[in-house]
Length: 309
Ligand code: SF4
Ligand code: SF4
Image (cartoon, rainbow, N blue to C red; front, side):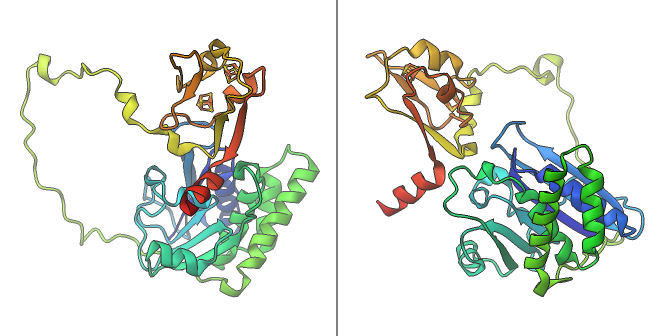
């Protein structure tokens, strides 16, 4: 059975990528499961989608723990623990990353012995969420790496799955998927099917006694407030809103009231301040600011500047 996991951010088309690959497997005669899994449904939040494909019926359920192939559409997710990109990787897992860096750099950085391939991603692009069709490119590359999906079936899968979109969009998706496919041509068939787990090797968990508690203790009740503060949603951000105080008119009731996460507070001078640990980068504040005093800076530029200093 092939077990393939796609990682990306909401808005990068990972759900579509898994559907395209799953449909192409199906057209080649495989039984298929494909499903996305979201954390928070919003643009920029880490999501993953997975595909299982087998010549026989698939009885395995749930998330893929030990994938044969992991595809990462946004390299900024690799170091984010919540994205789980590296979860369950084994020496035989192939890792494919869309990135401006080389495969050797990633192998060295991650200190892994797995095979790593890259799809070139432009470094100059401001917001990687604007890279439309990266999902189609990843699906095409994955199809080639399995070695069991022809370009013909891939194209048919795209036409079937994207029915209702404009011809221009369908054509561009086909073009990008073929580009991904051709980039992996030298490694066609390199991803091998993983074996099925053996029931004989399964060790059942030991019996656990769960003592009965009285209702007052056992019923769930949360007595501690503000626990959401501990969830640092700032890790989701791809673009950072930065207030230019030379242009800010201190009409804080506009931006602070518009932030869906309450991440803009007002200081004693009446100026707004952004809490970057909890700002998710939705950029609502940027769009409502009447003075255009909030600029956006790509996070990768800030990280590069911090690294250089
Ligand atoms: S809306 Fe814009 S100008 Fe008004 S306080 Fe917020 S950042 Fe400053
Ligand atoms: S981008 Fe602006 S509105 Fe969105 S979470 Fe951050 S501070 Fe709040």
